[in-house]
Length: 411
Image 1 (cartoon, rainbow, N blue to C red):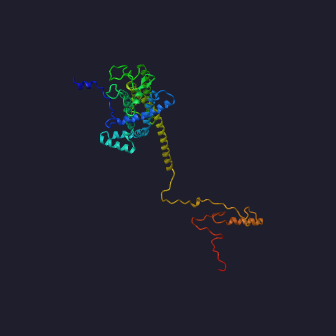
Image 2 (cartoon, rainbow, N blue to C red):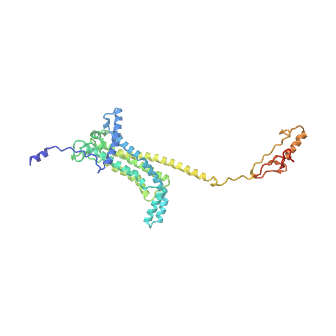
Image 3 (cartoon, helix red, strand yellow):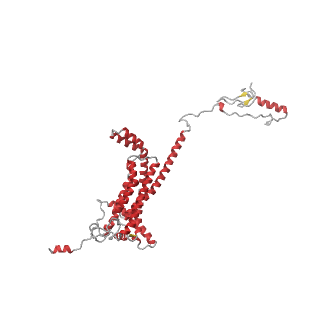
């Protein structure tokens, strides 16, 4: 064996080199997810320090809250796409009868059926991809958090393939935060990076055990099992609320939809109980916070939809009421009222001296004035002999008849 070979064997192993950001990996997901979690960890670490906690940035609950508020931040960002998904689902439910009619009509012509269904979706303003958008946006966040949480163990061991080297950073988290996450233990023996199926101890340097993370099997069971049950219950409740909303809107589940609802109610929660044994505790907190947020968000979204539908119904009702009133056609002339429909004013008897109560210079004169007034009423008034109503458009008659007065001095 040569001297150069012996020198290579005796030389210490080189420290792992930081790979940095890579465009050819999923770092564009890992860095934003770890960045949001890092911000919340600093906020809650500061708050725990204000309230006098020892080692506030290594406090396990500061890390738990940073994971949960990472969920809340992502769900707030995705609230608008979520509302679009809800509206799209309602529109799709409304056109289901027409969809069924098209399937029966063009059951032998697949191409024509596809064209008609696309046309119907376009007319109804339905985008089938809108119902999948929130899930497509949430899946990368779930994958990113799962990778970042598992990478805390890898970074603490010096990186991939280091086998016990000095810790390195975990995306946005520096080495100090990697050590802090490792030292954070719930109830003194439950690591957020550990899961229930990890071995208690291991002599293999490539296998991470509970003892390597400072955890114990008993504490992991006391913490992990209630978390798994709560996550399963939260999944069941959110699914039940969604299905109850569909029943409230009058959409009866049949066929494949009924089967899917059964899966959402019972199989998916049972799957959380099974898969949760392989999830790190921090990821169980993520799942629990995500489903409880979904339950509350559904209540808010349903209230917004009900208010929106009530406003639309009021607009439709107002439009129906406006059509009951008769409106003149454009350019039509207003109709004139008939002469018989005009109101007639009854004159009061006036004496010669102008008194309205029939009293004059003498009783006979007043009587004569009253008789004269009744015999020759003003034009347009009703006399004892019958109504004297001028014709429509006629000029008002002058007092004393139609006799033309002559000017003085003329014959």
